[in-house]
Length: 144
Length: 196
Image (cartoon, rainbow over all chains, first blue to last red; front, side):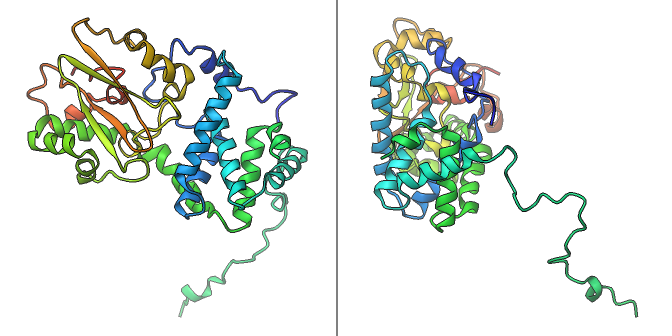
C-alpha cells in the first residue's frame, strides 16, 4: 500500500470540499477506484442471484448515508461508495452470507501481505513454461 | 461487530468481502465483472439521449413516453435494474423540472447510467430542494423569474428523467444529430439541451 495514512485520494478530498461548485463534467469516470467498482458489482451480482434484496440494501444505504451526514455536518470526507460498502457489509452479514468478523479478519490478512502480493503462484520469471495444458499440436499438422 | 472492520481501508474491506463471497460460491466473479463493465462502458446517458431525440421528432412516441416512461423506454431496448418505474417529466417554456434523490441516490440507470458524483453529494441532495434556483445558477443554468422550477425527489417507487425542451433552430436535424445535443445534465434538469 502507499505510505502512512496514504489512502486519502486527493481527487476525493477535492470533490468533497467543493460542494458549492459541483463538478459538471459529463464524461467523469463512473468509479474513482477499483474497490468502488467491486462494491458496486458485488451488490448487483448478489441481487441478481437473489441472495440479497435490493430494497433491504437500499434501506441500509439510506441509513448509512443519513448516519454519516448526521455525524459529519461539514460534509468533509464524504464517500458515497464507503456508505455503499458499509450497507453491503450489513445486508450480507444480516443475511448470514458472510459475517462481519470474517470480513475484518480477511481484510487484516490482506493488509499484512507485502506489496505486489497478487498472483502468489505466478512469480517464476525465467523458468521454463510448464507445458501444463499445452496440447500436443500434432493433431492439426499431419504432413502426410 | 463491524467496528474492527470499519477501521480498515475500504479497498481492503471490499477485496476481503469479494474474495469471501467468491470463495463460498455466492458470487460469480464473471457476473460481477460483467455488471461493472456494463455500467462502465455500455449503459450511459447516450441511451436517454436517444429516448429524448425520438420524443422530439415523434409526437406519438412522446405521448407514450409521458404516459408510461418505462414502457416507451423499453421500446428502444433500454431496460434493467433501476428502470422499473421511470417517469418522464416534460419541460415547457414555463416549467422546468430538476431531479434529486434526497435519501440516497435513486437514478434511472437504463437511460442515464450511474449517477455522477455531484448527484450523490450531500450538498446537492439537500440544497436543490431548498434553493433550486441558486443551485441551478451554479450549474450555469439561469432561469427567468417567470419559469417555475419543480423539484422531483426520486424514490424506490419512481425514478425520474427530464425531457428537456427541444432547442430552437433544430428543425432540420436528424434524430441522431438531435441525440448528440442531449446531455446527461439536461436529463437530470441541471442544464438545457445544447444548441447545434
